[in-house]
Length: 411
Image 1 (cartoon, rainbow, N blue to C red):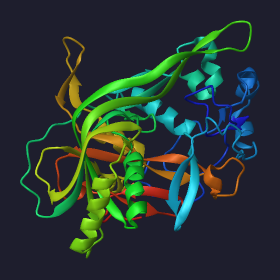
Image 2 (cartoon, one colour):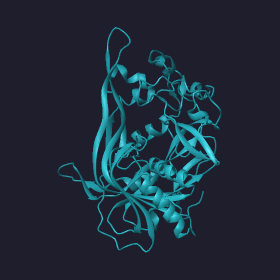
Image 3 (cartoon, rainbow, N blue to C red):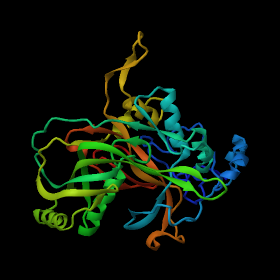
Image 4 (cartoon, rainbow, N blue to C red):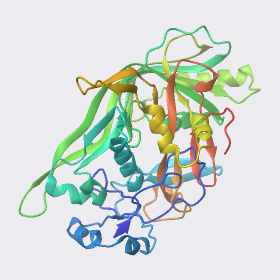
């Protein structure tokens, strides 16, 4: 079939039909998603069987554009991921599925504009198996491009004025591939999911900040075999890139919360340690109420910067993000080597989900909640030391759910 979003993109083991769908409502232009950026190719050959890919690849652009929209049922409940997302005072089971056009645009613009650093990751090393993942990975020869930065280190701050509910722990093998677009931090959506387990237990809205120290990357993946057919074809099973780090999470109750309410949440945190964060296992866990006094590196929302830059014509949020992300420098005329004069600390992060359909009752949905297919939404973020700007809050919008700075940005 012709589609826009591919459940099989990162794993050919997933027996799930592709989607041919659009985000259901307008998305603010400072987010990065299929609704906000220009894509050189929106429609792709994404058949369930790799044997049919040649038929669909021959279709002209106008034929692809005229293919009917399609949102499938959950055909592979074992391998299709489902997350419970708070929405309209209840929950929706959502299945994130990547936009081929967005990921292709990140790869192509990265190389065309000589964005540095750019990390090429092999998803499928076997040429014969490229088509099993769909046309996009076939065109990119089994690889995708990810943005990558090292952790920036800061000197110790002055002690904060306010006290915060504080969680400290070491997290091993947390997923830091952020929707397979960047390598550095876990998704803000993953941190927000961990915080929501606390919100649900204490029945209180919590804004959060997350900081990191001593971060070291690993990889998560392994080799498997496609067993059908006369010839056994090896395939790479790669779902994520992982890291181990010391983490601090600062929690902030809504304005006007009493000391008694803070103590109630603190007791819960101390008696119910988070066992997992962003898919990683927690160790050396502690929870307390105190003023912040350390030198962790925090993730800060920079959507406001993007919004301001978009006042120019002819650019989109991905253009702005790349310009803010790339290291500054010049090519040495004698050696031909790019020499860095300034390293930047901005990168993109997976900060929300946009609905590709309205939630509906569906067979195989998790806990019988309404189900919806969703597209990951990305924001420009920066590494910074602690300030009032480091906090994140969850917002429900017509198009979906996003995490963003509680400080003023439009939309």
